Image (tube, rainbow, N blue to C red):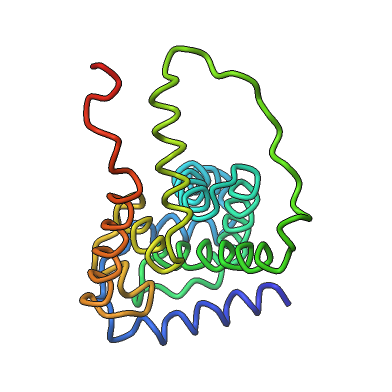
Length: 207
């Protein structure tokens, strides 16, 4: 059942991607083929190559380390299940995997909205951070918080293009929007982030 659902998801993604994205040589094609054949070394290589990217994607989308880890692991499990059935030649495997990761993130975000705010557990207080790197950690936390406050589609565009380093064409195809629409989302997202972080200046750490 799960395998059929994943395959259906790939087919649906192909229908969306076809005509929006040029056909690229897929650097993961051989690796996916070997994973599909059950090659243990290939499976380890895929985890090493893709798990950090999925973890970074989920963390930026969810701003929650535990949930990000769950999403990344589930995305990798689906990648492993999909590998024997993978159809190359339409979209890159990495692009499809990002779509899987994003869908899992949006599932989590929808569930969050269904939970009353007063039912959410308080985050534990980890105590004071060490002096070294305190300012950098604070800036990083503020950037993450500002990113989390963006509308979903603006955050998705920023994460894909700036953090995951997808091209505008790849990100637009993944989001099922035109490049112009993507650039509009990026522009609005950047503007909102600049306003939220206006008091942070380069060299604020005294470097």
